[in-house]
Length: 265
Image (cartoon, rainbow, N blue to C red; front, side):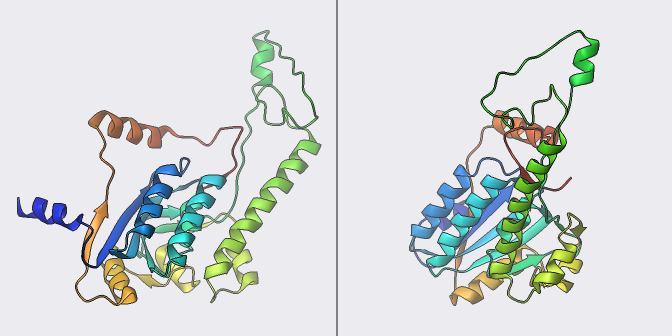
């Protein structure tokens, strides 16, 4: 009963508060997170933000949108501290770079700096079934990722150029805030490989080894507040929705022909 009341009182926007926002699951829909970040940015009682990052990544656009929302929060003068959980890789790692201080656990799986787009061809299978398809298109690249055809060499080159640009955006997003990293050394390890938290620390990709409470304490120090009220930003969900989202996260495969991904494979 006491803990419930304490949790309820912490949500009242008075005093100096530290918000803890969890970003988890596959990052494909940035809107709920962006809305929360904007509300926290405008809340004068919120003096600092802790992001609990627990995700293997997601689509490029969604990751970049959350990255920008975190930048807007940071531009308001409020510090951001990142707490990486079990996995904070690829697109999740991307958004974490905005943090003023980044913690990882020793065994956190992080990194996976890279971009992927996947194509599955069903052409041979369809031929065996006697199914034929015809595309009427306005340009030679319009059906590039159609599963009814093989990729041509020209299409492969086109896709490679596309993901190379997204990859360069990833690199620049890291270098913008991780000032202690040498660009050439970063590119040497930015080949899709994952690191432990300890490895990431040695490469200056994170700032310290620690958990969520360490991140909260650091946020308090950076915001220079003596007695902060910590509250966890939550979104009420029905049992059915929780079950559905958990199942979706387990079964998700990055096969959409409309997206390129920052995601660990």
